[in-house]
Length: 367
Image (cartoon, rainbow, N blue to C red; front, side, top):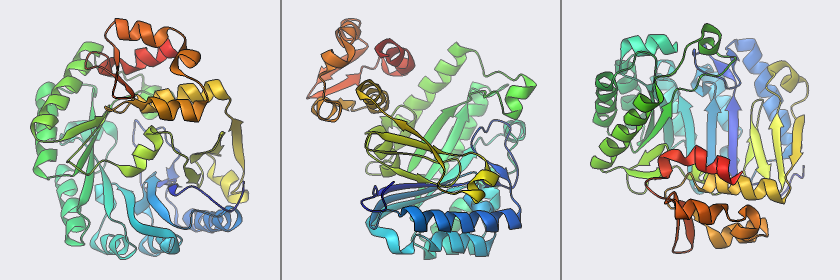
């Protein structure tokens, strides 16, 4: 990896959590002050050895739970990026509401953080307990108030649906409470049972597919009635507040990922850091590297671009992939158009209203 001309889009993974949620399959370990110090030292070494973008356009610190770090460690972490913030940067930190206090909110604001992604998930105490979450709906409201008091008003809320035992009524209460907090952005996640999670080991299953589809359709309609733009299959925003960082992924731009559990894409190289904290501390620049061939690039770009309501810029696809749609996918796109699943308009290939909820099936056919 070269130390110059790094992407202007940076993701930083914080692998620590105060507790482990039952559904989470991200790289995470229980927070310990000593381990967190060793991790910070390794992160600093990785930045010194590899470099990061000098004028970042977006910086996203996720996890894990970034605010599970103590006050001094959170300040130290954010200090690593103070001299890399470009003008007009979108600077996001993920937040578990019970882990945020006034001092941490002040630290975030002091370092230029201007966007927060809060893991609300549900307003129902029973559902939160099932998920292994340690916060209440009141904690979410308190976190939002703390952030706004420090000038961080670009707030995104995460909501989950298709939870075991969840009903349309309990889902509606959660959506209503989220909307009452006036977020700029909302992300929607259906429960996926991963093998190595608590849910997976206990044999939990999400709701019936038809109920899950009804929940998704209802939320989409409700949020759009409230003025939110449904700009990506699982993301909604007030006008002008789409996640610029995530748009970099969905439009298949290069991005750098640092720390254990992070991934990145630069040119035709995709890389994944170790998920082992111990291995990362020992060698913070070790990666598994994959060289993408033309077929990989064509499919990955379609997979990401078609998540967007506006779809895929066909000329950009041809420039990036060095192939036309027909050369990349044969007659599959024409067949999907014939069935009313996708459409070509204004230089974009996009899913129709009929096809959008069936995106995974469309991608499977293209693959």
